[in-house]
Amino acid sequence: MSRSFSVGQLKGLEVSEAIRRFLGTLLESGAVRAVLVPKHTPATNMVTQALVTDREKLDGADPLAPVQMINAAHAVRELAKEPLEQNEGKIATVLRPCEVRAVIELVKLKQILPDSLYLIGYDCPGVYEVMQYRDRVEAVGDADEVRVEVLERFAEAAADPEADLRVACQLCTYFTADSADLSLSWIGADDQSLLLNVLSEKGEQLTQALQGAVGLEEVGEAPERTEQIKAVRARRLKAQDEEQEDLLSALAPCIRCYNCREVCPICYCKECLLVPAKMGYSSERYLRRAQKKGQIKMPVDTVLYHLTKMNHMASSCVACGLCEQACPMDIPLGRIYSRVGRHVQALFDYVPGRSLEEELPVTTFKEEELPQVEDIKR
Amino acid sequence: MERSTFEPTIIGFLCNWCTYAGADLAGTSRIQYPPNIRIIRMMCSGSLDPTYVLKVLLEGADGVLIGGCHPGECHYISGNLKARRRVAILKSVLQDAGLEPERVWLRWISASEGAYFAETVREMVDHIRALGPNPLKLEWAV
Image (tube, rainbow over all chains, first blue to last red; front, side, top):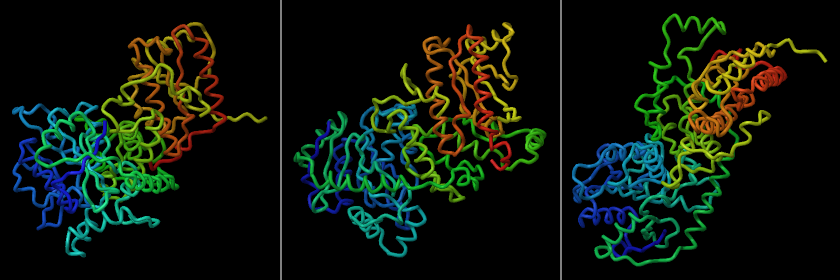
């Protein structure tokens, strides 16, 4: 199911303003009880997730601002971990594609109840690292200008138009939110106009509730859009193929601070196998371990930590790159985890967050599969 | 040809219902097999977290044998088939980490296959001996 509409009410508006207006209508019409959306905090030049119930407070809401402090799936999890007491009205969560996909994985992992949510995705132009974003805004002096710059560069055919964005974004091939309920798209649209794409049953319901208020006109698929998506995807697939440095040496600076686990939207376990209580040893045991090889690195088990984490979450990794942003040692974790994830996911022809219907690879099996696992020569 | 004197250390994670019983049968039947394997009994191959395999490899074990029931014969219905997926993931991660996935073997060996268990250990010891010692044995900074 996929239908696209142009929105009469939003014609001629700049994309961010159009999104704000659309969210305002959602709140005003009573179609939703609240909106979760990234919002500027002008005094501090930051953009943070905000749960907004008052339409007047949508000023400064800006999902396209090129910065991402957390994967919003974390916030969605807080909002939908249990049924709401008041059963009327859902929450519209306005999400980047990597956040939509993480939410869908968390639904499958039984950490999010989707009933009270609308997932509203949008075409994502990519983001800067947080501190680089702030520096950029300070240098340019205007957050709107920084956003427009990134949006305009997206369509450019230059060799590497996004080189200063976060690496995870430079390598991202899922920059359209195809598995949301609704998506707001601007890629390939002429005169910057925003299209509304209905992608699910729920999305259909919400759209019908809005029909009168915004003026919808069904439009066909724009060939420019398909072309542009194809070109950007091809460029990034090529970048993904590039040689990777040796993984063990890349992980060598790890101090096992657990930041990458904390910010990972997929790592949800309340009791993690990898916490110090589980991995730590008695003082005597460190000495005995040292005696085995004659010496031991401290902190211990940094490589074990990462390789275990990969085994546990790589099949659901949405490659959002937040782990890399959080790493105090600048280990290129986004590149590492997304590459390991791609290889694991390919084994099962699985794309995290592609569909709620697809079972998690680790909770299911086929009776006959993976002959290479039993063939020791590989 | 000169025979290598390297004696590999192999850790076996064997399921209680099939492969462990198969190993037991090999013993009670007096079938000879190399003493290189150290066996850890699990309730099911499906209950093996990959972290334990990683840990022994990082500590320098030369090989890991994971033994479970033949497909369709798991005491817990499908633990072995879930184990197969986990081992597939594990081998993929090992490959990306530049470690050697062929040090990890998954075999289905039933309680009645004592001879096959002994044969598997022989085959594995020969294979790992040819492969050489686990390079991580000397690597302390992991």
